[in-house]
Length: 353
Image (cartoon, rainbow, N blue to C red):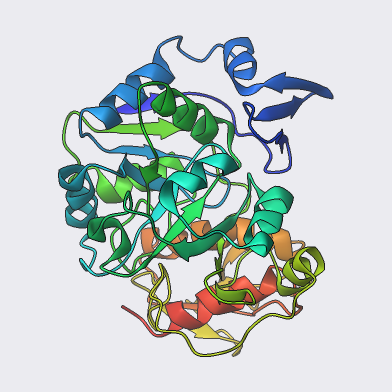
C-alpha cells in the first residue's frame, strides 16, 4: 500500500543534536521532526502505523536522502529473509542497518574507534555508512556471515520519523538495502519502487512516498575496523572530507569485507550503458547541460552540476528503459567530489547485469 506522506525535504535541512530528536530547518526555523510532520499535515497515525507494520514483520519501503530503501526489522530473521526474496538478493550479501541516533550504534557494535565517532558527529544524519565490528545483536542474516555490520543514520525527515517511532515500540534498527531488484538501477522516487517491486510485495507491506531523493546515489561506505578509515564504496562523503575530520590518511589496503553495491556489475538498466563515446541516432544521452545533443539522439538528462548529475542519474537510466532504448551514452563528470561516486556507478552499470 502506498502512503503519500509529504513533500521532499532537502538533504541539508536536517540538523542533529546528539542524544536528542533530529532537528529540521524549515523556512529558516528549527523544529523537531515530530513538529515538522504535524505542521505539514502528515496523517496523524502514518508513522505509528508504519512502525507497527515493521514490528509485525512487514516490509516498509521508505525515502532517504540517497535512494529509497526496502526496510525490515533488523532483528527479525523472517522479515529480513523477505527483503532477500523480494529483491532477489544473494543471501551472503550484507545489509545496512539504519538507526535514528548515533548513540544507537552502541547496540550494534562493541568496538567503535574514536575516528568513527568523529565521522558520525560530522556527517550524521547523512549519506555515510560505517562498517564496524558487530555485537551479538547483529546476526548472520544481517551481516552475510561476516564479523562486521554496516550502520547509518539517514538524513530524511520521514526516515528519521519512522526510526523514532520504531524505537518507541522497542525497535533496534531497520535493515534496508535499496528498494529495487538486485543489480538493477536504484530508485529515487516512490513511483520507481512501485513500478519495480509491487508484484513482489505483500498486501501488508507499505511504501512511504517522501518525494524524490535529493542526493541520488547511495551512501559512502567506510570501513572503520582498522587503524585508518577505508572507503569501500564512494558517495557524497568524499576522501577529502573524511581525512579532514579524522586527521588520518585513508587506507588503501585490500579488504575481504563484502558491502552493498560492490559487485563488478551493478546499478544496470536493461539498456546498454556506454561511456564517453559519441552517441548515434536513437541512442539515449546523458551529459552536462553545456554539451549539445546530436541530431536524432534522445536527451535523457542535462545536469548543471555534479550534484545535479547524481540527483538525476538513476531517473534518467530508468527513463531509457521506459522508452525501450537499446543504448545509453553517458559523458562522465570529472572531479574528486560526488563525481567519483557517479563514475563508480556508471562503470558498474556499463558491465550489464
